Each structure stands twice: as structure tokens, then as C-alpha cells.
Image: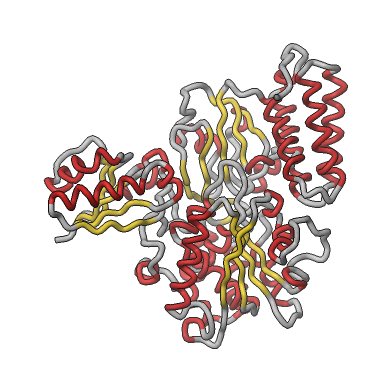
Amino acid sequence: MTMRLFIARDAGAVAVGADDVALAFEQAAARRGIEIEIVRTGSRGLYWLEPLVEVATPQGRVAFGPVTPTDAPFLLEAIISDGPHPLRLGITEEIPWLRRQTRLTFARCGVIDPRSVDDYRAHGGYKGLERALTLGADAILADVTTSGLRGRGGAGFPTGIKWRTVALASGTRKYIVCNADEGDSGTFADRMIMEGDPFVVIEGMTIAGVAVGASKGYIYIRSEYPHAVQAMNTAISAAKGAGYLGAGIGGSSHSFDLEVRVGAGAYVCGEETSLLESLEGRRGIVRAKPPLPAHQGLFGKPTVINNVLSFAAIPFILAGGAKAYADFGMGRSRGTMPIQLAGNIRYGGLFETAFGITLGELVDDIGGGTLTGRAVRAVQVGGPLGAYFPRALFDTPFDYEAFAARDGLIGHGGIVVFDDSVDMAKQARFAMEFCAVESCGKCTPCRIGSTRGVETIDKIRRGERVAENIAVVEDLCNTMKFGSLCALGGFTPYPVMSALKHFKDDFGPATHLQAAE
């Protein structure tokens, strides 16, 4: 009987040796004359346990980790004899960190072979599209609206409203665009889903095409994600071969095709209009709005543009029902959010759960506090443009409105943890510097305000006229927040002002720190 092992080909797992572990198992099995099959999956998202090796047993998959190549021969012996092993974690789904999650979007990630349409279908894939093809556009739009799904890329705009606007827009051609330009620090959910369950993104985009009358879609992936680019291109080819892309999708009268485009790494191209400019072959510069992309988007045509996680949530909504999805969450934040725990944290990885869990639960309970063992001082939520929250705000529920009420952002769901050694004045400077480097340069508040911000914070850190220069920074932040064309300049004030508000001692005259090199 062939032994079946599951080892991730996810970039995060590969970075810590998953390919070497897979090779070591192949070699150890060959020496023993044992037949094994190694299925290269996506990651389960328990990154502190990668490389994770799972073994198929009658009781379910049994996990071992983190495994090194030198562990392979001894681990193989333990598997054969069903004996104890120090790396044995038990049934994978029973690992507490995984068991307490509510995995709707990531249900298949780490479970299936991401290159196999048959494996995807065997685990519930394409049921959403099959139902969508029987419903028609109006009913699909009603389901998406009823689900309460909001954009998972930053602003949290209701997905159903965006799709309906495109559906009602007049145009000879319409487009579906997936924003996979995941550039926020501490975020990796888009990459994980594209590498571990690419068909769910394809299915979600195809349903969007049916709903709004679009026959062409583009997936814009940042160049720093070569594994995701390869995974999506492989899955697109497989979906075409199985009749789920191209003419007559799923045996219907609808046609829909997809193409991957690779960006050059500009952070500003995560902003939807800059992304569209780049897709059209031009430099990624922000467009003034209106017109909205829903009316005049890609090539001047009505365009649905959503984040990877937004499209990935759609198949569950159509297959499992809008109400089933909306039953999770709180207030206007419905469904689940794949939250990414990163930075100085003991248990880093992806944790999908319903909206409403508190920031403190995520950092202290699920994340296990800092890896260094020092006290948590600050947490940044929402990428490099997100606010810094001190421990006093750890009772904040993970909810769009709850964070906004405390001058914060959920953004793409990334959480970066800092211990008590962090210099928050330096972090505020970094936010301004990041904006200055990444600005497309089109609007003055972003282009000039961020540069002046770096200079002024340097003066503060040197102890020069601290009170006056803090007033200048606050004024710059106000101008950038309300005068910038897009969120790059408009959101940079969040980390700066939160650092000033919650960690003001770091900006005091007593600090007298040197300016950054």
C-alpha cells in the first residue's frame, strides 16, 4: 500500500525548507523500498510549524512539524511503525490553533492539490458556479448583497453594490479585475490562497463575470510572488481544459476567460485606479475619481475590481447560501476575515475567524504574545498605513466600524506586533518615508507632505523645537488626509498620528535620538 504524504509548496513553507524535506522523504523511502506519494499542497497557515508534514491515515491526516530534512528517515520509521515521535502533533484538524478557526474562504487551503481541478471539485469546488449558472444575474447579485460581503482589500465597500453598479452600467464590454498586488507589511493571505487554492479565485471571478455580463478577467499579481503567478497560470490552464473557462463555461451559454498580468512591484498599484493604469500598459499613477471604475474602468469600460479574498469568498456564498455567510460576524461586518499574524509574535500565521473577536484575543491568546517574551507595546493593524494600537485598545473588536471609531483601519487584515523595545518616533518616521518612496507623485499633499514629514520628524527626534515641530507634523497629516488623491497619502497620517497620540513620550525632548541613517 502506497503511503500518502502532504507537504506544502507554499512560498512560506518553501522558504524554510519544504522542498528539501519532500526530497529527503523521497530518498528515505527509496532506500527502504517503500512506495510513497507526496502531494504538494498549500500551507495550512500555521507558519511556526512549517515545514509541516501530514500523513494520510484511516483516522484522518496526522501532522508532524516543524520537520527538517534530517528528520525524514527517523520520521518515516515512526510512521511505518505507528510509534511515538517528538514532532507528532496528532490529527491535523484537531490542532487547537486550527480547530478554533472558522474556515470558509480557506477551507481547502492546505488540504487539496492546488493544481488539480478534480481535487478541487471533490472538496466542494465549483458548486457555487454551478448554482450561479442556474440563478441568473439578478439572483446572483441579490445573494452577494444579502451576504453582507464587503471588500477585503481595505476600504470595506459593499461588494454587492459595486457589482450591481457594473451590471447596470451601459457598455459593449465589461471586465473583471482581481487586485492581487498584496503589498502591505505582515500580509500574505492573497498569496496563500493563490498558491494553495487558486481555483476558488477563478470560480469567484467567473461568477462575477456571469453576474455583471463580463467575458474577460485579469489577475494583477505583484512580481514578488512568482510562486503565485505560476500557480494561477497552471490553474487557469486546468480550468480551461475542464470547461470552466472559455466559451460555454460549465456547459452554459456564458463565456469567460482569464489572464494573469504581473506588476513591477509599485506599492501604489494596490490602489485600484493605479492598477488599471498599469494593466493598460502605462505608469501606475492614480486617477482622479469620478468617474469610478464601475462606470469607466479598464480600457474605459465598466469594471468590477476586487481583492483576491473578496473573490475567494464568493463561491461559499453561492454554494452555501447568502444567509449562511451573513450569520457570521457582527454589525455591518459580516462573514469571516482571514487575519494574518506577523511581526514579533510567537505563533505567526493565518487565522480565519468571524468578525467580532477582540484585538487582545488575537495577539495574546491566539498569537501567544511576543516571540522575544517581552511585553507587547504596540500593534499595527492594516499594513504600513494602519494605525498603531497600544494595549489600552486591545478590547477593540475586529470590525470595520469599531476600528474606525478608534481612528484605525482593518485594511487587508494584517496584524504586526512590536514589543517594548520599539521606538515609536522611528516608526512614525518610517510611515512618512514609506509614503515618500512609494508615492506616484501625482498629488502635492502626498508627494511633498511625506517628504516634509520625514524632515520634520527627524528634527523632533533630534530634540529641535519639539512642540512646534509636532504641530507642523499634525498640520501635514491633516493636509495629507483630506487633500491626497488616494489612500497612500490619505492613510499615511494614521500610523503617524496614532504614534503621536498613544506613544507621545517617544517624541519628547528627553528622547534626543539620532535621526535615522
